[in-house]
Structure formats: C-alpha cells, structure tokens
Length: 216
Image (cartoon, rainbow, N blue to C red; front, side):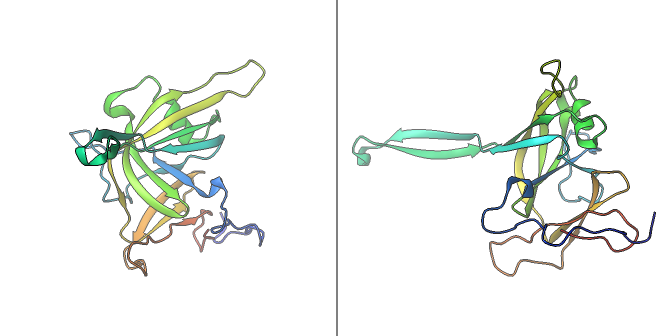
C-alpha cells in the first residue's frame, strides 16, 4: 500500500453541513467486537478498544424514535384539562435496506439472529448532523433476509439504546482501518467546544493509509 493516498474526492462533492442536510450525513457505527464485563455491561469511557463498523452498505433507511413514557394527569387548577409529563425515554434507531454479504456491520448483525441476552449487546456511536453520542445498546428485531424470489434480499434491525447516552469529552475521530468499513476511534480532549452547550463535530478519516488521510 502506498504511504499516502493516490486519489482524493472531487472538490464540490463535500457533505453539506448546513441548510437542509441530506440524511446520509447521519452515521451509525457499531462495535462489532464488544467487550462485556462480568455483569454483561460495556464500557462507554474508552472507545479506543472498539472495532467500529459503519452501518451503511446496503442500508437505505435509518429512523430514530424516542419511545417516550408519559403520564397524563388532571389537577384542580387545570379547569378540567390534563397535563402531560414525559417521565422517560428509550431511544431506538430502526435500520433497513438490502442484505449485503461481506459487509462487516451487516455480517455482525446477521450473526446475532439466533442469539439473545448479553450476546446481542454492544456499543453504538451515532453521529447526528456531525455531532456524536455513544450509548450501550441491544440489537433487536433482526430480519436477516427475505422478499420476493427475483428481488434483493431485505435486511433490517433495531438499535435499542440502553440507559443514558454519553457525549464525547473532546473531538471524536474515526479512522478507516485496513478492513473496509471498519474504523478505529480516538478522542482528542484538548479540543473543546467554544460555546457552552455545543458539541465538537466528529471527524471521519475515510482513507486507510500510513500517511496523512483525508478527513470529512
């Protein structure tokens, strides 16, 4: 392999990060080699030990939902009208598309079809409009194949966030490895947001080289 990439993306084809961004700017990465402790929990404080597969090939739809738990109560000062209080949420991302054999993320999920319990637990990095969060998660409702005889096989599953997600204390960088569509992760804690309440955009290095890669 060459020390530096011999090609680069065409100028003007960069991702639109403002205005009306398209859905493909949102990215999902699953740890396909999760390390669970004796209690069946994953570590959210160290992302450098993960093998992060990009959930993208063959995928044409990603739909997040909050799955809120709420109460509706009527009080005497409400004049007969009720108040709604959201008491909890479970974030879920429904992923669907076509089965692509050989893709690391899809192969990992397909391999979980007959499994349950801690075997279907891992970690997810969700980059939503360039800002990343990380969460423990469970892979559920896997449909590994199916459809008409003369059509591409269907493929779908859910990513169910477990517990409270976390943000990154600095800039997350995901760098392509020698395995296509699998990334390593680092966090530069010296890069902090300039404004309170803001998050540092994630950086994705698309080319796996020994030299300088091209970032997005």
